[in-house]
Length: 214
Ligand code: MN3
Image (cartoon, rainbow, N blue to C red; front, side, top):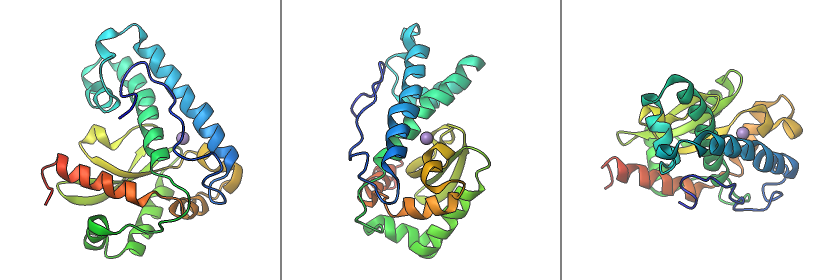
């Protein structure tokens, strides 16, 4: 991946700010990427600037090894390395409205583990609505099976050895300008702009990493 370690820079979105209209609005995307993500990047760089031993670590490495570090550093890394990782992950899994559903091995696994794609959407939406305050809902792979999990704040499933396939940011800044307090409407709209081909590639990479690839 481009810009894998310190110093972190804010990579441009892989689509224009208005590329997700009318489902996620241009102003939200601009503020979310240029201000919210930028703040996490700046804070993470400050955190690492005088800690050269951490500067070669990738975001997943920073997140996965945080628990071995002093407690105040753990929290700062969980919030800021997590904030950069989670936002890049979320933004990369969005695309112009087009491909409305997964296919191939991911669809087969969704049918197997959730019954159907529409049942998966219901369960995923329920999980996203269940996040109290700020956080994310995730589709992850573990041991070859799919699971839906949530994380508070900028925590990530990587800390728990789970392999992320898809994530929705349910912090209010991700939707409040357009959807106000209606998180469920935002999740419905988010489903219209999921980059399913990319989610399928994530699933294949997860299976390969866990030795489950066929
Ligand atoms: Mn966010």
